[in-house]
Amino acid sequence: MRVGYYPGCSLVGSSRDFGESVAAVAGALEVELAEVPGWNCCGASSAHALDHLLALALPASVLASAARAGLGEVLAPCASCYHRLVSAQRELAGSEQLRRQVERVIDMPVGAPVKVLNVLEWLERCIDLITPKVKQPFARTVACYYGCLLVRPAKVIEFDRSEDPVSMDQLVARVGGKTVEWGFKTECCGAALSIPRTPTVGQLGARIVRNAAGSGAEAIVVACPMCHSNLDMRRGAIEEALGTSVDLPVLFITQVVGLALGISERALGLQRHFVEVRWPGRTPTATASASGGAAPVR
Amino acid sequence: MDHAPSELLRMLQLELPEQEGRVLGSQAIWMCIGCQTCISRCPKEVDLPRALDFLRRESLEQGRVHPDARDIVAFHRAFLSSIARHGRLFELGTVVGYKLRTGHLLQDAALAPAMLAKGKLGLVPHGGDAQAAAAIFERARAVAEEAGE
Image (cartoon, rainbow over all chains, first blue to last red; front, top):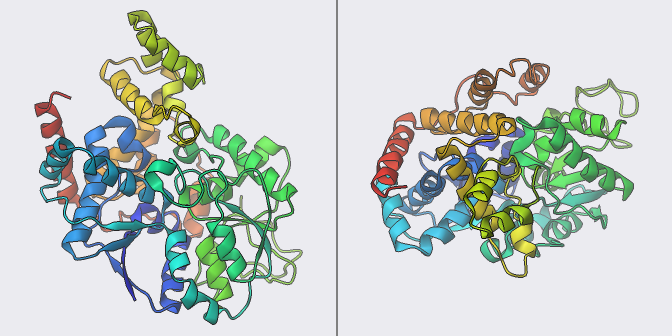
């Protein structure tokens, strides 16, 4: 099997662990990830805040390159990339004038429509490849955190249920895990305010982490690099807002599936987390013992 | 946030220049990060995220950015100039650009070594097509000017 692949900037940068785990899972399932040739940044949240035409042209350039390379479907694991690609596609399909302007900017025809897949959609599709290969059922109880951009706005994204999505919970169940009912599945983590408003991101993350921990989860599972870094790398700001420390690791869904497939923790990038994955019976790669290892770097 | 989103819309509905000025000079328009919750729940499907995108660009153009929001604008600018220069986001360069624009030189100083140790901070840009990106930015400017945006 072969699918077009748009890693986006985070997956080759600060969320390398997401990129590594996507690649490791694809490898185990014998799915070839065909990278969009010469891809550029989608513009994320900054382009649409400052420049409408760029906010359309940057994703359009990615989609046009994919179409030119004959890729009918493109996996975009980053929720923000996914959202920008789908939104731009929808907006351009609705305006002939905008499409013409954008084609001048990218100096290419927009090209044949490309189906953009988010990581949950892609894993769902691969489920019949995944289940026979499960070697170590993921016997943990987790809180699935979807965030904003995978499910909203429903009319544009048309994926899962926007208020109470279930696709990630179902994936976790299929690889042997349990998921909790909790209230913050689709609350916002603060996304790009991470740098200009770190304390705000700490407060938003505090509510999410507190609710997940209070519902009995052993970890939070995410499908977005911004959600991951705001809940993991920004745990210091979260703990400042909470006034206490919370030992609740944050895993990418591809790491959960990868662990169940028996892929090594290192290949899945687990050692890159700030909040170390410390479960009963698990010996972390970086420390000597599961219960009394060195404090994770925060 | 100095105004709730519903207040911003009400102020605009009044069509009074001083109210428009308050909206464009508000901090609130920069605190919205487009989580899309409002439009998803609004029974009238008011597209606030899009309205706020427009208001932000107007606020910038008219030089009315709220003083407390200048660092947010600086972040967006640093982000875009990184893409214009490299084609892909170069995170370290973006953070340095943000620090230079805002003077927040020591912010997250402790985070960088930890990120480096975990392999999460690249020291060189990762393989974008710089020339193609520069051309897209240049043509976008030309096309927007022509369209009178």
